[in-house]
Length: 293
Length: 281
Image (cartoon, rainbow over the protein chains, first blue to last red):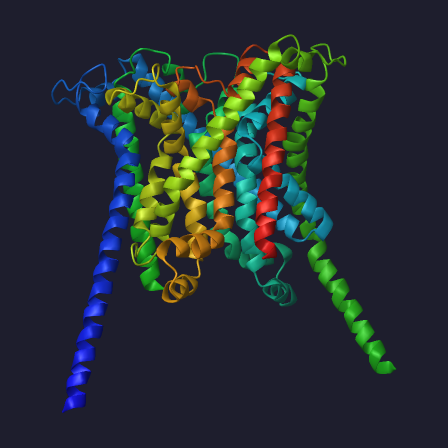
């Protein structure tokens, strides 16, 4: 009887202690998450601000002149030179990113495969050279490329721009493919060869499928870097003919002007919407894949 | 006797076979190697060549003199000092803000899926020049005019832009944190401050080091943000290189590039010292 009482007493004590601990953890969790959400809010504030004012027709952001979708209509009308400039810059940004990323992915994947079979010393030299553009300041790479083309007596052109973006992105393809090659089971490749596969067959059926995730993430990082690039683009973009602009260089050129074209707000809003949709689609795709596996 | 001969034979066949399998794959690295030499290594060597020559290609020290002699030294040193100052300040603020964020994101108690992590990375997909312009306008809206407060505005812009680059490496190290050590420290009576400085911080030093370099290096050379948010009053090394490029003074620009390379080399050495210390423990 007595021992039983004692037991319930200690049980109560333990329970209250546990509850206190739980409450403490809960309050900690709430403070932590509040902090994170406040930071997120601040991070998104400038973009949300642009998007909010894409729905009004005032020259200056921060001045609400009533709801209007004029900035969207203007963006899609060819009557306004600013709209044409934005779309041309957007198209340039996109195709430069696609072409340079594809070339980087191809060259980088081949390079990583080749490097995998090199002797240790030469491989170390390759790895060191691969690290240079990653560690180096972008502006030094940009200047060095301009000097290279000046040295060769060439003007900067689309070619130098693509090369510039490849210098920027290529190392990231290589460092993304390399770990996948190292994880690969070398005996599989040899087994394929022993079982009569041709070299090309072994390469495409055994090796490439194993490293596809690395190739894809290398390509994605290349696209991200290339789309966002300003410094290398402004140095290596074509210097002759009519003004060549990507979004970065076009918008930077607007900085000195008093007012920004209102289409820029609707353009940003559309791009942001697109990114959100892509992100959600990607997450859903990942979740489904996770469920299947 | 005959047995060992057979083994010898077999190993020689095996090694020949594996050579035969491996050798031809090497050639895949040739195009990449050519690209590295032609567009990465050779251009950097050219920077040194240009720094020590004039427009005609004759050897000269005038490029260095133009930056460090005849009263120019103070303004050049000011640019270097400003760059280091902006970079250091941005890095420290970024780490102070990013550290708790990364800790919370990596802790499964707070964050069960990766959605929050993605949310922090999402703004990176909006062009950073557009983001900078938006930052400038919102700062003006709340009364922080870039003409009146160039330093505050520039640092806010820098932190805003580089925060995701600081969060990511920290987050990756914190995912691998040994939670039992933290719990053990707490159970053995360490107060939260001690737990933080004696167990969590030492375990995350590699993340702090890589986050610092990810932030410090690009900040020093990125002139777009300071241009926009300081009304071109804060001059970084990157800005100097750009203006020399605009004036077609590639030789003088090369000297600035060399200064930049020296600073990069120094920070790489510092990074290595810190990560080695960690490795030795």
